[in-house]
Length: 92
Ligand code: SF4
Image (cartoon, rainbow, N blue to C red; front, top):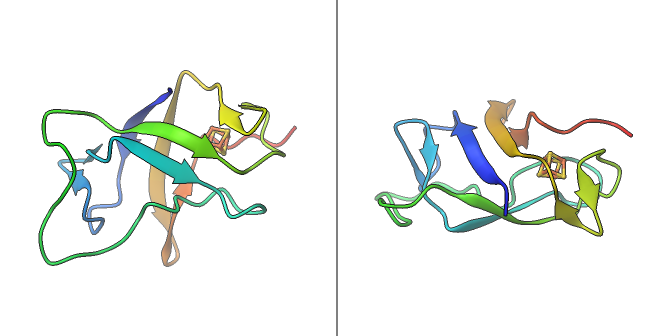
């Protein structure tokens, strides 16, 4: 599974020091390349010893998407407006 190389969404419960610690994130709501795993919580979660990976991606229109799985070498996630977006998304 591709690694979340950088995540700049500091507010996310799984984010510490620009690193995602969710073991497997889900990206996409079918049309937008948003991180569906993003949420806020009073304390941090995830596995502090692990770096997050893309478990599934529903953005079938992305160049890196093969059979609803991400095949990019790694992705970058950042906050756009009030959502967490996959910046590695590339239109086919
Ligand atoms: S790079 Fe494309 S296929 Fe990979 S997670 Fe981002 S939107 Fe999905």
